[in-house]
Image (cartoon, rainbow, N blue to C red; front, top):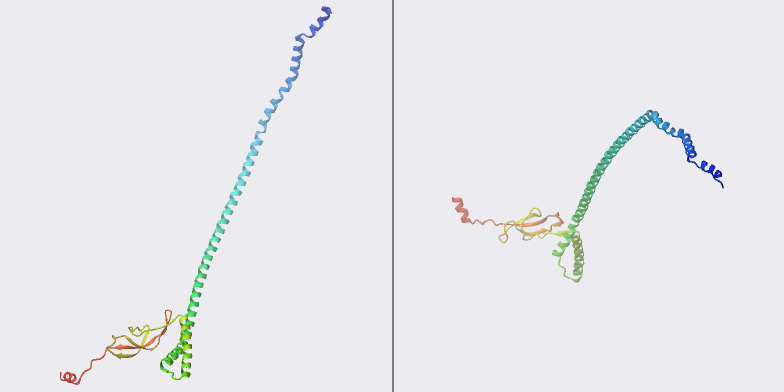
Length: 242
């Protein structure tokens, strides 16, 4: 190939043509770079609307907060009322429980007193029967075999009755030789004697009985008193002369 034929290739590869094309491309792109400037200006026009929206939101929040406060106050008031009702019911329950406990104790006491009084009345009615058995034992003297059999039979009944009374808590008084006590004894006779100190029970005429701490019957007793001095006729005459 000749040099003349190569010459157009050199011209076509020259950098000037390339530079010229690049600058042309740059001028075509320039209008696009101005568009962001328009967007940056738009928010400044919208700012009043956002401030108004924020004001509306804050007022709504205040209304909601006020409603919550009112609801909270109502619930607190309701809680106080329910607490007062609960305290009133607790106090009423405590009073009822105390009244019931007092009623239970009073009823138990009345029941105990009624049982004791009933037992006392029944035993008091049986005491004359016991007295008759004791008189029969001391006064009757069986001689024949038949009489001894009868005597032993009713004495067996007497022992059974006494055992039943002991199981019920009845005890007989033994006042002989003790000092006279008006709380337990009833003086029926007085005997002048020097063998016993004054006020000593010499003999029990009718037996007394006790049920626990309750006296069923006082013991009828004979009490010792000191002897009166014997005045002779000579002493009497001397006293008259004086």
